[in-house]
Image: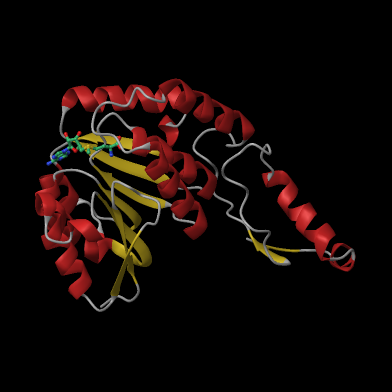
Length: 247
Ligand SMILES: C[S@@+](CC[C@H](N)C(=O)[O-])C[C@H]1O[C@@H](n2cnc3c(N)ncnc32)[C@H](O)[C@@H]1O
């Protein structure tokens, strides 16, 4: 749906326009994630309903409270908070809505990803093979208030990922490292142009192939239509491979 800003509002000056458009998105000053830059005079709005109720300050407060309570208690190979924030920012900045996570564990990265998707109008499918971790993740997603944004699957990703129809515009790969290349090959035809395949524990210093991720990195970097960089600020290593063209 396209909404045209009235002439009177336009003539009120750029500052007033930005304030008017940004106001509904405003978050408390202490928020580490400021609202996105103010849109231009023609605003694209997404008319699709959110899964249940409108996300907003209530959901933000619930997620923040959950993350605060859980800080220091993530013990199942979960991403550090700093990487969770990187994933969150990446999704918001690119407006991604169709996300896949390979390797849920107990759900730390899933919470950050789904929180971002609650703002873009998107949804996450996440896959975990371990039943206890899957169960704990589902409980965490509920407690964080994000269950409506997540389809959590208990499955072997070796089988499920190739069978998924897609499309996806954001994939976070964080399961068995020696299978990264296979996951990437399975997902590539379902990754939209502009989409991102993010792989955890992949960095310049692991280029020689720690845990088998080197094979993945060499392969993705050999594809001319993929553009790979490393997220600055991730001490665990996070490669970001953007699909720039279909082939
Ligand atoms: C590094 S942990 C994921 C951490 C999670 N992304 C987070 O930050 O909370 C990797 C997870 O991948 C799961 N995994 C390993 N092989 C898998 C497979 N073939 N299918 C699905 N999950 C798998 C493991 O059981 C483990 O829980």
